[in-house]
Length: 391
Length: 164
Image 1 (cartoon, each protein chain N blue to C red):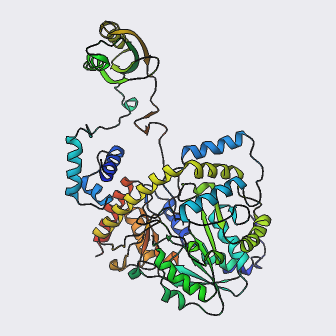
Image 2 (cartoon, rainbow over the protein chains, first blue to last red):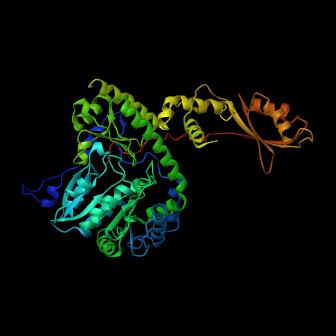
Image 3 (cartoon, helix red, strand yellow):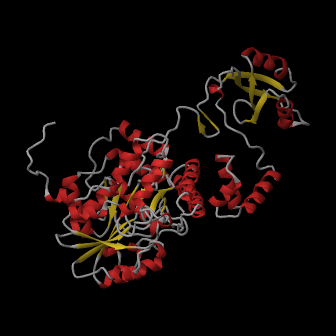
């Protein structure tokens, strides 16, 4: 296609956003044959058949039109019941829950509704690659708050408080964490909550990995006293129910905040896909047994992979949740990007360099253990050989 | 049966070749502990055998046939269904025998080289048993799923190689 003149037509905002560091690895790995991939940020299970079947049935019955902007009321009621039962969170289906097109869209409309130009948003990093760019798109300033390996990548009160100033508007939390697998228990969250209340900040809590908590059940910061009114919880169906391609998430929070987000949602998305919403209804009604089985399977693979990683010379803490191990590669003398690139070239194993996940990620690589045991065993063998040459 | 035993059974049912050391890692246990549990499961006749699931349709020289036979029987006072079943499962060509509820009593799975061979077995050996009242033979044409394993089409990972 012919290009427009040399004048730059792109918005300053678009130009200011950095391209995702993961993209480069995707392109590299995708062209290779025989790659064992630990680079995938999604379950290796396909969606349970009863959920797929429910979506077919909804199409057969003609549910192919828009739903209510906030999502099918029936689904919001199920989400409300689920959040109550699973995490002791109280949200009314009518006004305090919005069904979104994946948790990603939920993050987008939440920031757009809450951030003014110049507002600072504290983001615990390493973290999911999309948070900072979405804050920027909303006009805000993302401020990374590094977590460290010696704390098992938990966000501490000291780290949080040292980054708060008069411009700080809100804190983004994502625990269990992508990429570190770190979790925060009730006591740890209580301490953070006290700081957050004292400075009158809002919390956006991305709890997409909540179900994938292996050593103790997940605690939501919104369930702590006096926190629900200043917290917006984000979750979805992708990870726990293995429904990434369905693009279905949700927001739960206080009515005044949620209604502002709904306004943006109405104009930019109308509603989440209706067919996917019918699948999600089935997931919440009859999916518990499958979720428990998948969680048990991830737990076993986590135990295996972390133990093996330590054995082959890549020190790794035992992550409490998600499906990622985040071993240190410092001993090899390589940067995380060099490590990932050379490992891919030499041994055809795809991992993601920790540096793409922001502050504090350097010196580590993200290994997703959402892969078959056979793939994990092969990967360990190959990584072991690779590391041995460099230690 | 405790939780650890159940979990080991689950792992071995998925892949009977999982090394004991790997099972130990997966369960945060020591290898010798796993070994002890597996041994006890074997001794208690809970684990009977370690078999491969084979798609014989992909073996070129294989041209055998499998039949499922519904058998109605009149159980004898002294021996009951178990005795009749034993008379049947002792034949080496019988691969499986189940006691069923419903329209018939025993479901018998036979493997033979040819349909004729199976038919011969039914008419000469099965039907002639005292307690057997009637048989209905169904030949198996294609296996789609066996013991939880889908045979075709190949189950490939459809995810992108790297994603956030």
